Image 1 (cartoon, rainbow, N blue to C red):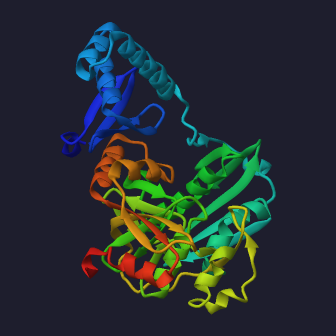
Image 2 (tube, rainbow, N blue to C red; image 1 turned 90 degrees about the vertical axis):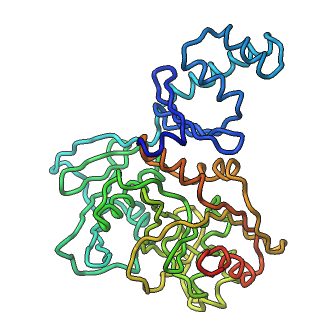
Amino acid sequence: MSEFISHNEFFVYQNSCILSHSINEQFLLWIESSHRFLMVEEPIHFVLTQLSLELEWSEISRMCARRYELSITECAQFVQDIVTQFEHLINESVLFVAESAYFESEKLPAFEKSTTYQFGHKSVTITSQTERIHQLFHSLFSHLETTEVSKENLTMQLFLWDEKLCIRTLNGDEVSWSKDDIPHFKGDVMGRILNFIYEKSDNDWMMTLHSSGVTNGRESILFTAAAGSGKSTMAALLQANGYELLSDDFVAVDLDSKAYRFDMQISVKRGALDVLTPFYPELVDQQEELGNNGKMVRYLSPKQSKYSQSAFPVTAIVFVNYDSEKECELLNVPTEKAVKDLLAETFVYPSHDTVLRFMTFVQNVRFYALNYSDSQKAVAIVSNLFSNEK
């Protein structure tokens, strides 16, 4: 951690570690106890640092009055509000933690589906209790289905037990998630597959993003936004124009800021058909399915990889928005604004070193917003973002 500490602040408040990184005139904070990130203005950061020194509230109020030229009364209320807010944030429960579990083999439910998928020279077998659980993953990996089980094979049993979504591996790892927390359950399964494929552990990753990614063989660009904004469409367009798809909807980035290939199918919504069928005519005759997001989609298989390596440095993150009524427009996004939007679509692995690396990453990566309607113009714009193609 020492290599990053000169660029960040570390302090303790209410028995919780808080990491702070300055971005322009704001501060990105990480609260360890609740794994919460937030961006704050300088006055809030100043008060927090003084509270961490265990100064009296009255003294902090007087310091604020002098520093910001406000009345003591206003500053006293300001300090009180910060104390109340941060006591809540520090004590907030961490919602994404899986619970350890134990299941007696003879009492496990019956499993309806068992499918094996080929990832390079390794295979993954997913055994699911129900068709619904099966489809959470089969729709993404059906193009990799195989009847052969490799010597290196990961087997996971997925099932519902006591109102919990459960994961059980043959090496004895057993965890459960709330039955309503499908995103984290799904992310846990995907993370296990990635760890197995690349021989990594959770400690080797910096973050996973709700995004699509492409590479030119030297670096990568990630497209992120809320569901339905056009990030999968943008990735498919770039694939049709010679770039390689790294992953769709779920991208993992390691501690060295490299995005990894993950051979998932691209989900194509109805609204994107007119844009993509000129490049992928096979979509016309493909049957629609109910996607994991509750919308009808068709799936497009990624093209075979043409690069020997599997990971590429992230050079830019683009917030995309397809809008048929707008001209193509690329805007620089200030880091402090971009980070707020990025965190809504990102899971950062919860350790001091990882969070510090994430803070350094967001300070150095380029952020853009792309509004597009004309697909060819959009492809040309993104092509120019690759530094090696300028």
